[in-house]
Length: 446
Image (tube, rainbow, N blue to C red; front, side):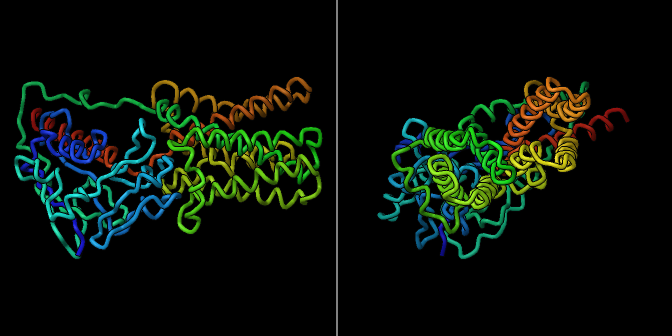
């Protein structure tokens, strides 16, 4: 029998007592148990629905399965426990969990997560969040099967969360007809795109260095070009390894990154990056010792392993067809140096198709929109510069082409959106609010 939570939204007043109790009992950072709110700004026409949530201790916990350091374990009761002493702070589990349960403690560098107050469980005492709830909205239960949550804003990734939610079925209040019912502008549409890229700057730099080094090794294997710069791929790979250490919250435990090779895409990526770094070093120190074709194949496998890290967390078609993915970006760069030129033309057309498919990115104000337009305009301008056939124009075309690839990689990180309950709540609310506003306006006009 699995332990789980029962939450009654109709009883929750959003007092945060459960959050405070969790923090005080376990010494966690505030927010390890959070209050998510549907209609957070209490806009008219719709109810305010609160949801107190920490870890749902899923039947198939993706956080535990995909953790490269094997920092999670699952108890016989179904409780998913995180072991801080094993965690290296890579945050990959935060991408895998759609319920925003694991959260990185930036001061300590490792993940913190609900474990149902393990010390209390030994004494058969309910978790602190439950005993602190003044309205009885949160309770503990034991079930063989928890079923599925039917609310539209609760993400379902087939993980089998151990939670029962009640009182959140009816989102519509009785319709009121105010004198001025047009409140559509009150729904927030702020764009956090640039912040996402800045937050993951180390991952962006890491992937760009690996892509550049891989492209150079593939070009050398196919054309023999780049003999005078054999050291560059190694320096780039060594730099990428150093940058990856900056990303970790607890770098001294980085050795644990490879111990979950069977089920963690991140472990497989680290193995491939390390292997390619060694081959790049041999390529520099002892040229020809390893056949260039073997190095090129390993480079391609490394690029695929990087993409799989993201595809495993965000399985949308948009990302899988994105021209900013590592494999496509590197091959597109290689095509510039290949003959015949039709290969370059083919990859440019594929990139253009991908950019057109993502036209909605241009609707975002500010930096992301500018990057998108730059990428879109760079494609035809490159061909215009190639047409004269002069050395200066060709050089400018190459610089613009490479800049376009970098822009597309930045857009890849913007478009990377693992399923998260914060986003599903906002999306569902905005959709429902717009629908109710339209209906209300029509009735007012009648």
